[in-house]
Length: 434
Image 1: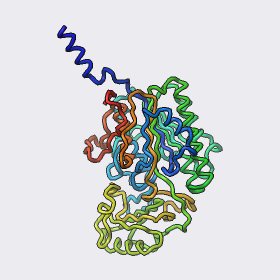
Image 2 (image 1 turned 135 degrees about the horizontal axis):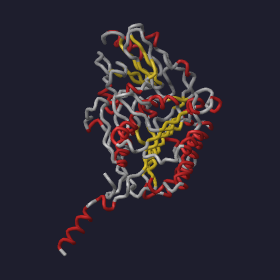
Image 3 (image 1 turned 90 degrees about the vertical axis):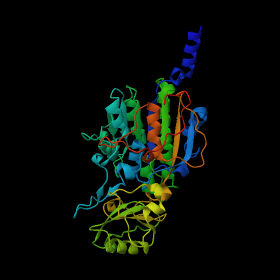
Image 4 (image 1 turned 180 degrees about the horizontal axis):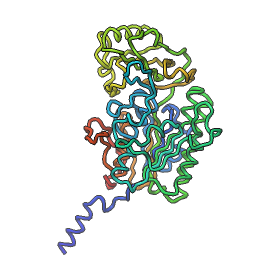
């Protein structure tokens, strides 16, 4: 009898005895969805889902994206759990610091210095299935495989898989309807982790600006795409083992003012890389008078709200002092970081070909994004309310906890200090696997 009592006590004390199996996770990134527009009248299906799954839903209306609030650094933070200072993708554009080289796009997968979740899963549990569907082709490139450094999703779809006439003629992006259709078509094998980039909202925001019928219509299309995904999971009998995470990479601001172009005024001793609401300024040689001069010129320029020094520059506010939470101390970031006031954007190479944009992002005013964690999986609970929204670097650690995988490491195999990682959201029930 005593042995039976001990056995029952041990079973009761073992969390895994009552824990549900590990879920399948769907991370949907609605590119350019500003938190201000996540409302029931614009996204009725999402809010109906939140209400239906109230006990298993955590809704954070104003999560915080990393800086710069741009597509590439924020997608990489979502899939690594660390800020740009750690993963090395410090914007959409940068200068390589090679003398004579122009500024360039920062979208090479070899430049990501931390394992993505795709890499962790493939290296540690290759039997699990990962899938990526990217409305923006550049993201399929950014998360491609690099021998000895990164692994790609097991299955990848991008807008380039569509016939040219099906892509947006200006941007080359896929519609959200096509991205979801491709996701559902590839779902014969249920993915353990699926990552979707829906690009219509961002495209409409750039082309028309927020607060326009076009932007609102695109939000409705994204909402319909989410509903198609949920309906498909229900139809296939997968909803009760699914977790859906919906968020964005950045917000969007209207741009009524003329662009800021500073390359010529700053002189030949610096190189600039415009990045929407921010501009990176690099000294062509040792930091010194060139940066002091550039800071003076920028500070006197209409539309520049802040001039920040990543490296010591006499008389210029240190970036780490003004914004320690930005975590941008990496050599790919500019020696100076210029920040545009709301309504302004920087237009210097390499972004000059993309103007005029009626909406843009990159500055702190575009950091607030929605974050919803929901699903039919029994291990979810509604997270306790917090005074401040979480950071999007908390998404990857949450997926790590949901899937029971190890945290990403640096691509050289070294561990990353816990202080550099986001923290899992408190969305797991006490008896769920940890």
